[in-house]
Amino acid sequence: MYLSHVPSPVLRLPDLHPLLDAEYNSYDVGVMGELDVRILAELFGGRAVSSAITPAWNGGIYYAVQRKSAVTAAEKESTASLALLYESRWKSRAAAEAFLRIYAAQLPTKYSGVARRDKEEVGTSEQLYSTNEGDVLLSISGTSVFVGEGFPVALARTLRDRITEAQSSGPMQLVVTPQRDPALSLARMFSSFGLMKAAMPERYTLMQQ
Image (cartoon, rainbow, N blue to C red; front, top):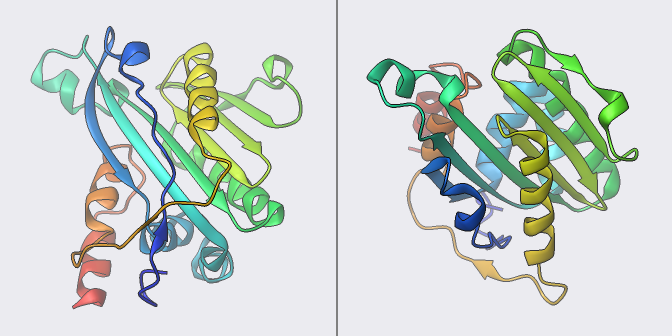
């Protein structure tokens, strides 16, 4: 959509401060774009997977926070101090399921001690994991995929439900992407979670010049 200059669908981010402000400070927030998705899908699944899945993207938002308990410079620089939620929407259930699979598959590349806790999952829509940096909750509802990383599972479920409730059942709002590099901020933010290879943001910045 960015590459073809088509306005991007916007998902709603509700007021989450009452749920988060006691324990977290805001770190980064933003609207996903098609180029963001292309970068992440290529990173997680390779270029062929990225080319196949990116056209099926239909909107996304992310919000990252940092624990207030991280007070020293070393603690603030640690990825363990961060927590992330990411909600994405897809044009079909099959595309949403494909994205969920490739996202789940890359968890062991960014965390150690990854272990699935399937007995604690609620229904077949959830995937719950333990990692060395906290819980990871992945879930799918219709054509939407929710990712919560670093939040306690009960809080992650509450955040997911609030975001789901906030989405309008009416026509999707649209926003025109500003003329800037839309992937750079998100790429840098995801690099804080150990996801992004150092050269990836620069690579895609150069592609847009």
